[in-house]
Length: 109
Length: 116
Image (cartoon, rainbow over all chains, first blue to last red; front, side):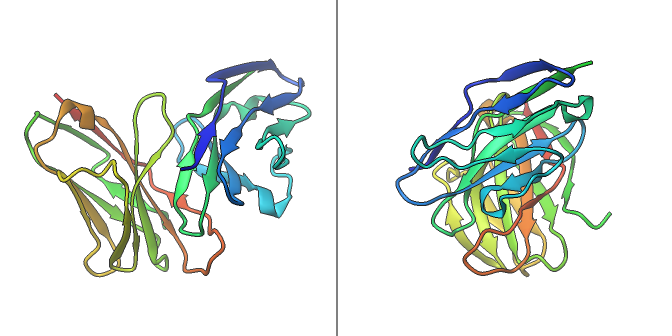
């Protein structure tokens, strides 16, 4: 069975500081990894996926199969980045997504 | 608003009562998912439809839970004989038709259930 672990429930950083939200996964095959974000009073939405290798809103995430990690990074945090971030995994091609418990990012002005 | 909609947004019920939630996906999306999210947790997969066919159900979905998507459009999730442990946010998501690769899931606003 697959599992996603986000060790931090809350991460507070100052505006302009670097951000790293940690995510580790367990799955025996080749998963697809994602980051979803939920801003205050908004719906859960996809932020980025590892296969796209893209930067969204300045965030990047690299899949490290050796360490089974998919950490989310941003070099300079902005106040509008404050939100709940969920790491997620899809395995087996069935569109069944396993979410982590989430990390609340708080950017302090 | 052309996004996924859910009704009601909030439901308060007494233990033992039955409740039904509705989800209307984005119109051209043929896949529909139900998730449950409790406080401090991420969404947990409950079940998945492709058109009207229910293709997978989680072990979380006890016999008291049933989901339908009769015409391949909207879906309903019914909980019978509710228990206090059923209190949670119930999320619906939909995706457009696709092949093997993952398609972005678009989430609704959720229905918050409180069982007294």
